[in-house]
Image (cartoon, rainbow, N blue to C red; front, side, top):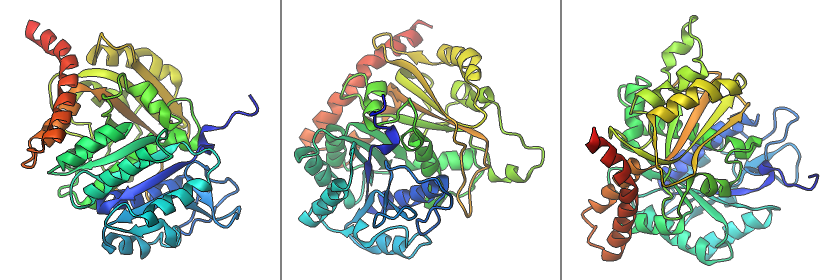
Length: 411
């Protein structure tokens, strides 16, 4: 149909809240700008304009663009770091907001960003589930769901530290449509044991999260049929509205030293995906349980040398043998291919660039139950209403988990 709106024309507003959310957001925009051939000031380096879904033109110029994003915090320390970075001219002044609550100023900034959109579809929210900004995030989520944006999709990049604000976690699981947790401890282990970084820093962790989100949003930015819009995440990955916690796995993760090896070759599609089948430490959230029940799964491939038949033959068969899918849910297995190759950060990068990557998104019982337990074990978990809602969600996942537990008991 000639009048159909392309996925990469459906605008998304990114809300980066708190120091963690802003640092990850800033790192991600660095990567997006490279992928879409923008310099540090937002000027296009070739004739191809960046997608409307993520970028807006500055003063209706055809050559200068800025992110569709707001950076929000309770103090200005991290904001000041971003404003003095290499990308300081990439953002406009009104994209930064310092506030201790969900003020009218903040909501007006959000309204102004949405007013310049033609086909606004929803929000991607990057935030921490701990620290003083978590209360601000909860208040913001409530406002977004109670105002004129109540029907818009909210997808979250939820950063998990050593502690969780249980009230915030309960509110997050109530208001967001898709929750994608990223656990510092799990990502630090990926940096150590897959990228050979002896002492990972937050910068290393943020880079890896950015690579993950680059793949996760690839279809939204370049156009594609798998997870090309925010609402497709719910359709593909969420079998029931409460079961909205999605785990992420990114491969290949190859240490930087190999990029200087003249004999290095990017792995084949099958070899790249092999750790999904044979290893446990590929997830961005704690995942060392020997058994797991998968409610839904989506593989997002990217790269110029992805051959569809390589995915459809031995790989899918072997993955279906090694992964236990729930018999009670027909959602199952989905794949998508985007032929735009991966890119690297302009400066220091932690891993070797390969000609292809794959991101696996799973709705599975073990990581979701782990996240619920992490929240329930907090010292402040005496807050009855928050406790009860998370306990109910845990039991919902545990009910499905019985399928695989019974299988293991029979062995």
